[in-house]
Amino acid sequence: VIALIAAIAAVAVGYGTGRTTKQIPDPATNHWDDPRSPEVLDHPNPAGKISATDRTNHLAKLKQRLIQQWRTSPEPLKDFELMDITHRQLSSLSAGELADFYHSLVSQFLPDFRLRQTILKEWALKDGPAAVTQSESTRGTPYNAHSAFETWGFQDPQKALTWLRETNLPPLLKNQDETIRLNFLIEMAQTDFGQVQEELSHLDAKERSSILRTLGSAIENHPELQEKIRELAKNYSDSASSLAVERALVSQQAKTDPDAALEHIAGLNLSPADKADMEIDVIMADHDHPEKSFGDWMARNPNIEAVPDSLWPMMDIRYTFHPEEMTHWMDSLAPGPLRDAFYERGTRLVASHRQYDKAATYADG
Image 1 (cartoon, rainbow, N blue to C red):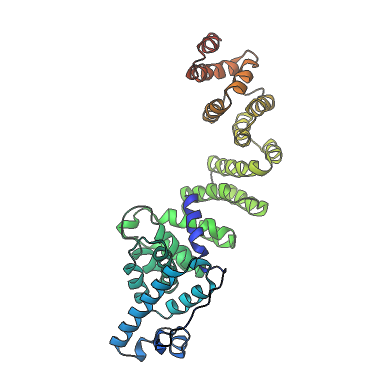
Image 2: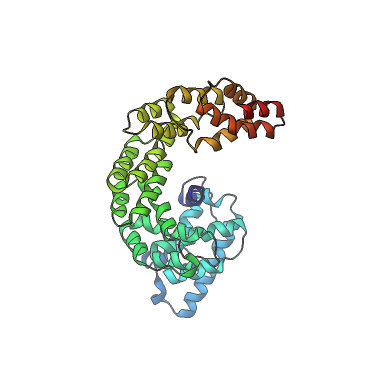
């Protein structure tokens, strides 16, 4: 889901600024083909000013010229003048004309693909519902629908989100409403968390918890937002869901400040087992010193009765990359139920590295 978000954000660079190139005007171009002509600038959709035939010819020339300009520009997304011309010309088209232009660009040539995404954004600004529901032609990851909804959503979030809640999406977007909403709310949280909070009040408990958990994992280096997410989880979620959100937040915090994350866990009103389980997300951030991180975890949790299930996959990975450190750590464990549990797991791990004598030692306890 988050990778998808990154892909969408990468294409959104299209309206940024960058290198300016000088366009040489064609003296043979008539006034309808000039994006700065009074007719185009004063009448964003001048179809009523000219005959249908003239309009058709104008659109054909406009499309061909834009395609050619995008194909010949070394970096069209960084070409400020080209982007300005593109925006002016696309803004002169109706929603239906933008839809036709979008669907006519079927080439996978990279400049055509980028131009197509730029057209999609203009289309979404003029007719968000149509751009969302009609931009996909095949079943699969609905990248275009996500992009269209994000563009429309930032223009009018309340209208877009209300529409998404109340609309039955077409078959190609079946069951995609929650994913589209989630991706948009992750982006919206950075600029308008109040709108996110408002939308959560309209959703069922399951989706609310899922969104809050994902937000907790996605929001980085923003303590104020993270605290708001934590408070919403307390208000909206049951204890298990609230704990899952808390865990996502702690995991994010551990990436930049593991000591603060451990201190936060220590202050939570949780059972020793739950605290030990949550601390695993902290030691997970330490990829290079498993002997120390596992040892410190054991020292902080001497009275737990069982090893949390969430520790086993991480132990497998750490052993794969640091077999000597992990073996040394297991050898240092004091006798007892926890050591027996680690030895049972360790038997398989060391045997996978053909250390059969060590595997036999662990198996014998």
